[in-house]
Length: 161
Image (tube, rainbow, N blue to C red; front, top):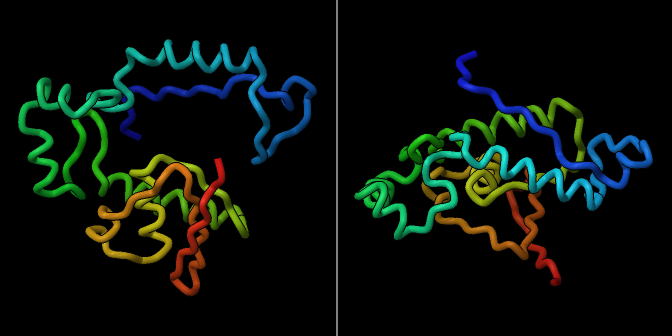
């Protein structure tokens, strides 16, 4: 494998970790200590170049530091790669692998939580949609998509906040 470097981390302590309850693929809330651990982890990896060179930058910062890159992205958004990061095509391949692994694990009704970029590609893979069409999709923070893979349909469920 051609990794350079590999960074492994564990989530902060959860309520279930504290009482030695097995979580499996379930979730439980972070404890106060777990929140402090998560903040410390974020601070520790902030200087590592593992999230791409544009991570955390606003568009005006990107234009100043990487002149013309946003224009190049518009030309071919699917294949354009974030400096030190990935392209939608890379994310698309990663999404396909993730879905295959979830299927191989025998999950019948998985809940997949992601960022919008990878979410578009997960949805594209599930629906067998064209990559260009998927790039135009958005995923609001207050929306859950329930995908019927067999029927290639998507139902939107608005999350109450």
